[in-house]
Amino acid sequence: MNPARNNNEFRSGPIDAVTGSLLGCALGDSIGLPFEGISARRIRRLNPGPLEQRLVFGYGMISDDTEHSCLVAQALIACGGDAETFGRNMAWRLRWWFLTLPAGIGLGTLRSAIKLWLGFPYHKSGANSAGNGPMMRSAIIGAYAGRDDRLREDLVAISSRITHSDPRAERAAQVIACATALALENETVSPARVEQYFEKWSRADEALKSLLQRAAHSASDNQSAQQFCDDNDMSKGVSGFCYSTLAVVLQIWFRHYGDAETAITEAVRCGGDTDTVAAIIGGMVGARVGRRGLPQHWLRRLTDWPRSVEWMESLCAQLNRCKAAGTRQRPKYVIFPFALIRNLLFILVVLAHGFRRLAPPY
Image 1: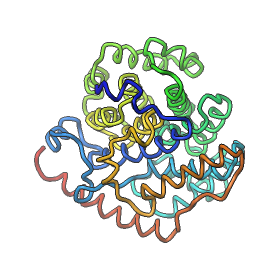
Image 2: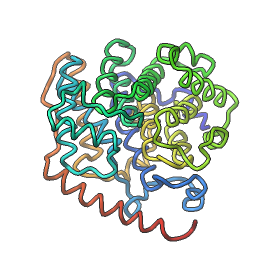
Image 3: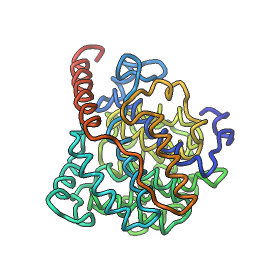
Image 4: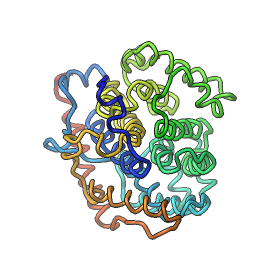
């Protein structure tokens, strides 16, 4: 743990939380992307030193994890704080996003996008899946709504049900958004208060309550995330099941909610669904520390298009203005052919990494 990062030196103000969350999500996504699906053991062999951007000749790109958070930000700008308008707008954004041929789209999100195009309303389009989709786009909702519990919970519920109808996926997303909001105002986050923080979603779910307690106890004992994974049948990596991901994310968050670089590094080194786990924790910690508290050496080498760092910052600035004024606007958008061309090139990059994994070290 880096003490300098946990003494609130980089404490984010409310208006900077959204920018920090989106960019933190993008950093976690880009740092974790080259290692997606690889075991913790092989990650150590491939990259024994500090993690850096490395997807394309020392530069990073984002995946669907960050793109979904961008869609949420756009829908929030267009809805002006109205949850129903948010749902309809988010559903249309997912429809068009699906047509850009995004690589790595989850099965639940894929099925939901098809249902949306077949005419299902947004509150009935969710697939029966307990995947990570809702969680990866909920930190930015926590950063936006803060401790406005009703607004935050309504937005997370709608965002979750558009793609995932399994209540576990929604509960996990609610916990992520709540945790993000908590860290915005609390000087310290205590693992001992885990039941108080999340009792609303865990009281009727013994599995969720158990994993929250295990994550809190592990954090109190100052275990590493890798030790926690080894003790909980995740030694080969974190799966795409929302409760497995949630347990690891919270174990890291309790210890490093003020240190984005350490939090993201621990998430990636657990292996498995590295980009999503790191994107979630990056979005949570980023909301706390703001843009200034993020690893600048990672941010400088995050090079993507058309959703560049500058584009995401401009989008967040627009969202902050809309929230402050209580208005809605037409959000910044991505030109459809540009997104399609980018994704076709991105698929080639992903395939190149797939072939690279066939070579040593194993």
